[in-house]
Amino acid sequence: MAWLTIIGGGLAGLSLCDEILTNFEDAGKPLPGAIEVYEQKTSYTDDRSFCFFADTDSIPKHGQNYSSWAFSQHGTGEQITHESKQHRYCRLRGIDVFTDLLHRLNAHSQVSIRMGYKFETHHAEGIVVDTRPAPADQFIIKQSFLGKEIKTQNLTQHQATLMGNMRLEQGQFTFDYILPTSSDSVLFEVTQFSVENLPREKLNELWCKAAQRHGFNNSEIIREECAVLPMGLKTKAYKRLNSQQLRWGTGYGYLGTKHWARNCAQSIMVDGQPRYPSKITTQNRFDRALLRVIKDQPHALPDVFMCLARQLSPGQFARFMTEPGFTDYWNVMTAVPKLPFLRALYGRD
Ligand SMILES: Cc1cc2nc3c(=O)[nH]c(=O)nc-3n(C[C@H](O)[C@H](O)[C@H](O)COP(=O)(O)OP(=O)(O)OC[C@H]3O[C@@H](n4cnc5c(N)ncnc54)[C@H](O)[C@@H]3O)c2cc1C
Image (cartoon, rainbow, N blue to C red; front, top):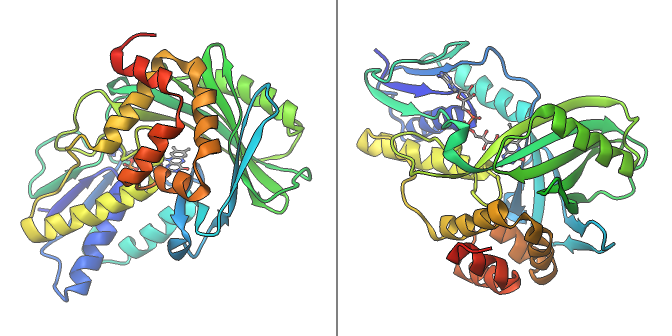
């Protein structure tokens, strides 16, 4: 019988396993028993990037980082660029992160990673940690995106365009994302926030239209990444990690997942119990209001995000995207246009 069963070998499941091994090693104690990780996929592929903001002391050793990031709104010609000395926008290739984790876990004699195994029963013995995501209909908003990493000679700047050409496409808030990945390649994505999942064909139409505008449409495609990321659980998460730790208002999840894995490993080691997020935090309250604006007033969003970009300093913006404190919320609340948020709070449009 396994001492610990982890359902789902995504970033959360593998990071948790890694943290547990590290904790026991650091404490000089043997693992109490075997760890089994069940993953329904049969392999890990180069299908995603993990991007996030970090301060200069915590930039990862690998991957890319960017000291400037930009925003622009369709039809106005306005572009706002943030330059930061203290913060970086960082990118890790998902496959590098998974390869590194698997390398360490597979080397441990008490860890088994069971690939291609769809876990069905809810009654495994021992400690069980469930990292399976909740079904898509449990979420308020979906962030659908299609990105293609392409070869290009048209690169002029090494900056990340986080929200470019913000606009409405068929009534839904849409923007372009451009990340140089080498001197002659770029990850070019189109993202849409909406209540419904956006099918891949529809995303591809949007991608081709946007790529044409940037002169990327005939470029050689190196790889693709496509996802519908859930934003904002309708109900509270109990006894499983079903929101993928994605920040409700942004869709960023890498740092939150790593943070959860550290805390959960501690909790298992000390109490023999996993820990799942349960509280509705200030962050979730603000993000929930933002999600209501996304749902009911998408036309207000280009202004909301341009106001944030214009009025927050690069450091304030980077902190808001990671672990905002009270002052960061205050700055954001004073920066955004008030009407959409008041309408969201009082349920009127
Ligand atoms: C294309 C893409 C780009 C992304 N970009 C970013 C980014 O730039 N920045 C960022 O912060 N986040 C990003 N994310 C989100 C980030 O990947 C997630 O926050 C993170 O991977 C969540 O990890 P997780 O383990 O909680 O969930 P998942 O990655 O969904 O892992 C859950 C695992 O459980 C497995 N599973 C499900 N059901 C079963 C079952 N019955 N039995 C066994 N296994 C099962 C699944 O196959 C999956 O591997 C991106 C995601 C994608 C897909």
